[in-house]
Image (cartoon, rainbow, N blue to C red; front, side, top):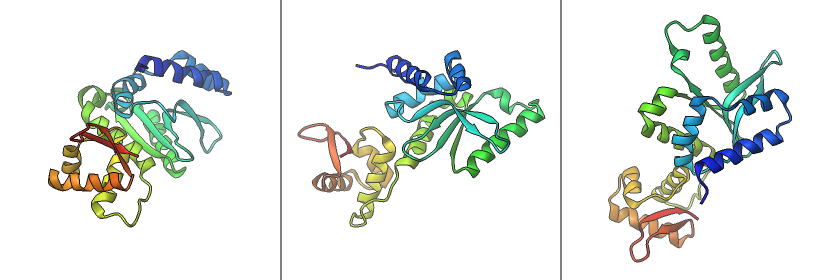
Amino acid sequence: MNTYEDAYDKWLDHQIRTEKSARRRELLQRGLGHGTVELLRSIWYPTIGNLDHLHAEFEVRDYNNGCRYLDLAYMPGSKKGCVEIHGFRSHARDIEASRFKDLCMKQALLALDDWLFLPIAYLSIEEDAGVVKQLVLSFVGKFLSTTVNSELTWAEAETIRFARTRMKPFTPKELSAHLQLSEHRTRVVLRSLIDKRLLLVASGTQRYRTFRLA
């Protein structure tokens, strides 16, 4: 069974070996920032289950043809997302004016180039891990939330959207809370989606316990 350490080493090694930019390769070889590593170790990998589509120290160009580097770029297909981890100093009262201006400019350039931007405070990773996990799930869900079959009921359609953002098996109780329906009614919705081959049972035999996308 692959561990996070195995997945991380393979992921980083692949990026170093395939990188053509000498500057980015050097940054990767130095090792990622502590905040980035902690986000991947304690939040991203346990929540999403993989490091697919993530690119560390991703290089982008600004208006002056200079290079800027993103902590993490999330790029499934042609879509573009950026995750930036901010240490306390970057928000401290005595932050240098030039550094503050540069942070604002970086975010503005990303927004104008159609990047979905997710800033995360390092303190939140330490103190509010549950909240950050939900932010990451919602962030990833933005890239997976495509239109659903118009023939589905609202509850069925919302269940499919919910399953896409979860990225891991979910229980009827979790779905019931999301839909604000009774657990009995929720199981009716789940059975309908299984019959339509849109959901699969992830665990359980006589009484299904968890579900996932087909």
